[in-house]
Image (tube, rainbow, N blue to C red; front, side, top):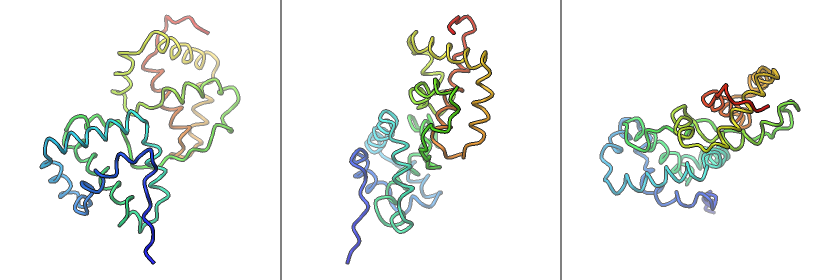
Length: 210
């Protein structure tokens, strides 16, 4: 009896056709992957750019990671998970070649993040949870700087006020200890770390919020 193929979650269905078309077996060979990326037509680049931007805009990165992490080796080799893995390899190859928008490196597919919840976060840091979930989507300092350049006054004030509160209360050290004690693939610590990086870049000493 033929085993049913592992289907993409409905939210990721927009990737299916491109994954089957561009996620070919040759992509698994790094030199061939780069050659394929270099020879893509303008129309293919347009389609792939739309997928890349949609993953970013819809914040689908974590869902992709979780879906792939639950796939068996056989599914990753021959089924839809394999097509998706190879599609992502192609997107990364385009980034390494300096092709926009793929060279923004805003998306990292390498390590599946595990969502564990915030229950063990020290109580005194719970005021950071909302901001961590709100602002942690940016993956690189350039992305964070681009956001800050166009951020509204409310966002800048919130970030500056939180950063000031963390430093003056000693909570920065508590947050650092908690993050250091978390596994590298924990989603919550990654979000809090991203928030701290963003607050540091947005640091405004003149902000007098408490």
